[in-house]
Length: 94
Figure 1: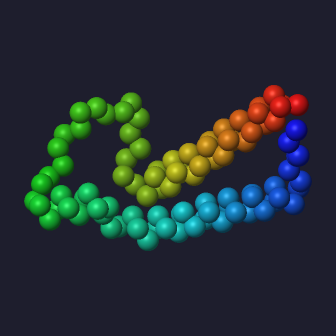
Figure 2 (figure 1 turned 60 degrees about the vertical axis):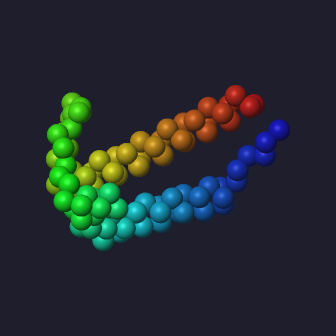
């Protein structure tokens, strides 16, 4: 049987996740203005961006606030799914 995780370790894991989330936002603040490798290569080669083959039903735009909001929402949705999956697996082991 698996030994349950004590509260001390849960607090440590939660702290690491919070630090990672804050660090990710900080990284985004400084790296968003620079293009990624593909964008830089396309600019150097003089190639423009083509029309998309498929567009999604929702458009979040290119604003900083919408990108930040979607990133935060995505982070917490992923965290919630992982938490629920862990609880489900823990109950099935019992």
